Image (cartoon, rainbow, N blue to C red; front, side):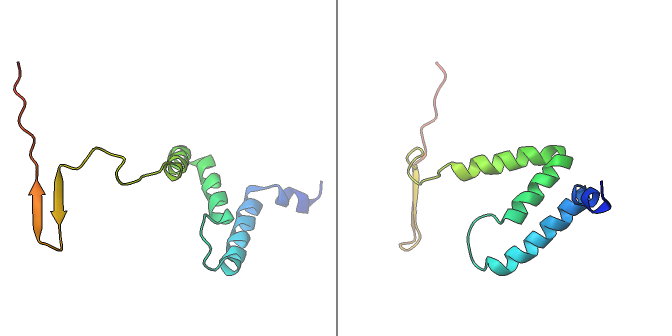
Length: 98
C-alpha cells in the first residue's frame, strides 16, 4: 500500500476533506436553507467520539419532524389584548378532595 492511500483512509484526511467541503459550500451556498453537508458530516464525526452527541442529533432530528401548530393544544384560559391594553384571566375553581 502506498503512503497516499494510507493517508486518504485516515481520520486526519476525513477532517481535512470536511473542512474543504465546508469552504466550498460557504461560497456555493449563499442563502440556501437547510443543513450544509459539511455541518452534518462534522456532527456525525463528533457523534463517533462523544457519547451524548448521538442522542442530541437524534433529538434534533425528531424535533424537525414534529409539527407545532397553534390551536393543537388545550384552549387558552387567558387572553391578552396588547393593542387594547386588556387582559382576561380565567382562574379555575379549586377542586376540593371528596
